[in-house]
Figure 1 (tube, rainbow, N blue to C red):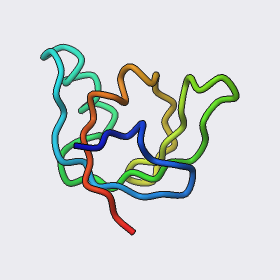
Figure 2: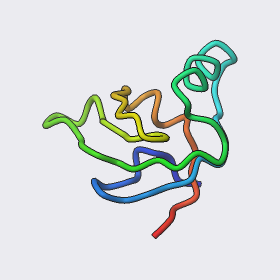
Figure 3: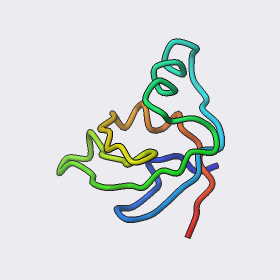
Figure 4: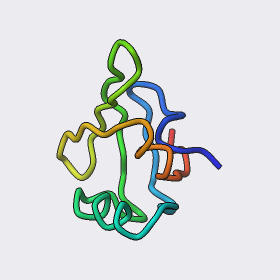
Length: 76
């Protein structure tokens, strides 16, 4: 199953599920990253961490370790 980390800049994905401990899942959900949400990969930092994504119209920067927990269905 793909995660947000597998997206390249400009690619889209739909959040399928979030697999992590409850406190991190809550933090991620508070940012609007919930199942069914559309994610657009915006940028990847020069050394790969953090990444910038767009979720429901808001640009968010998250760590790659957090993004690995967000499983997606790729959308063209």
